[in-house]
Image 1 (spheres, rainbow, N blue to C red):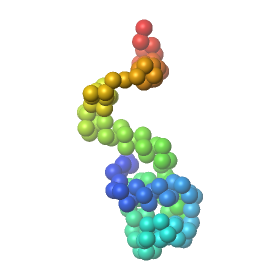
Image 2: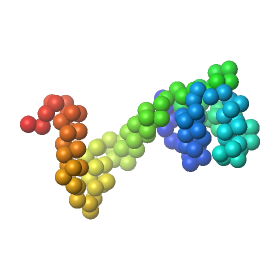
Image 3: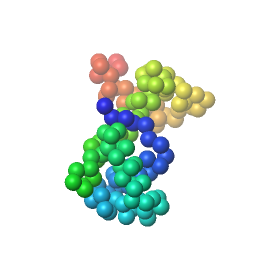
Image 4: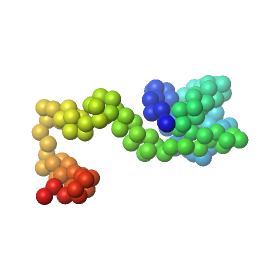
Length: 124
């Protein structure tokens, strides 16, 4: 099971890996120093933590994503909806759109999404 909770600094570091993978651990240390001001030990500590969360693999000094950035975002979104709205997509959308009128384009996009993703395959 992948742990989808990342702190701000972990998220910035993960972004560096996703943008550059596969990447050698040495190059990752250089990028983390340049972009985040980290020392080598900090880079390896945070990398180990993200590997333990199931996001990345560090095999013989080669760092690769175990989960793509897109898959991570999908899982994190699902986790949020499950935790905050008991898994109810309608409750989430209601909260998201509260006090805001949807444009015709947004309504069309939502109806298309519903048609493509409903169990019956069609609203009508």
